[in-house]
Image: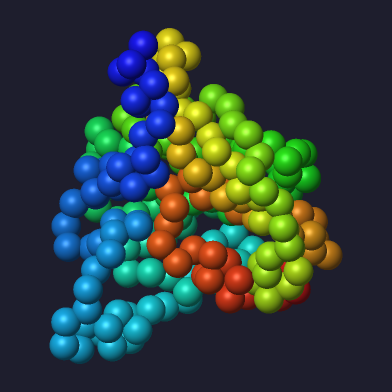
Length: 198
């Protein structure tokens, strides 16, 4: 019983540390803090590029791998993921899939793994809901505490999950992040919509 309680209350920092286990190479994992030395900060700024992510163009961090789209879901993952490890990622969802999402509930069917190997999202509770800038427009941000369970349904860890919604002329956009991608709040805010969604 004690072990299960300890796992259930696993600190967010420890959960996010699984990012490092899922990535190799020199690129920093999401949530890692990297102290710049010399011109490192300028090099990171120069390396920043705009990346298309579904209907958005986003200022991509160095560790982002180009998004892949399946149906209504476009995912961005961290580069250097090992084949047998959960890959850190976030998803941008559009179309009928996005319009069918209840924004007050955590969304899990996004193709992005939980931060613990062998687990999937199994439930969660809404912590807060507030206005938030999404691609320069007024959207909403929902913050959840979600449970990741193993294939037997046993809870292994709880982690934060942020979701943003934005209603556009072409429909709803939903962004799902349960990996605490560093700087994503700013990148979501400063993203731009492609012409057909603007």
